[in-house]
Image (cartoon, rainbow, N blue to C red; front, top):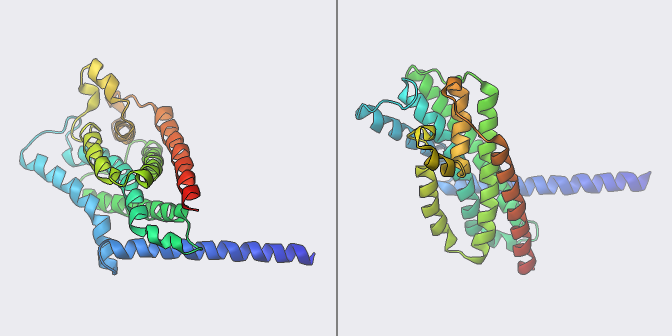
Length: 264
């Protein structure tokens, strides 16, 4: 009986230590991005929001109609938010490992801890950014409530899974080729432009649209957008997005494991 209690106490102690390490890493990520203050983290949250609202402002000023519906702000936001959630997670996880790698010299900190802590930070940041975008849409008179809320929520979850998958692969790649940080930035621009944020991909010719749908970020944008425009006939391959993300996570974790074995 005493041995069982001792083992349980040891497990609780180990879990508490790990949670303390994870909490410290998350706080460090939040405080070192834009200054060690709450306002600095506020900049991190507002950064993707500014991106979205600049996009809306440009198309509103030029009086370019939305490809679908009569609400420019809602159309662009429904496409931009899931794509930016994916891109921020996939990029920032890689940057976190590059910037915080010296912390792995401490025995309490593992490479996976750096990855996991930044993923949690980016999920929280993305959720707060979504709240800001939703609040601003309400203020300007748009209705941000989707026709099918469950579809919208699962679309955002799909973007998170995809971001985690590509992010872990990026960590594995940058462990061997540090220059991939710049390479992925260029690749992200191509993915962003072909993700259907400022246009409706299904309006493209079938031959082009067929190949565009292999971009999982485009599928995430259409996934969320279909929740707001159920009568638009948007077809989403849900299984493709989820399996793509889970497969990428598996490959990325195997790569990270290989990097850890080389470090030891």
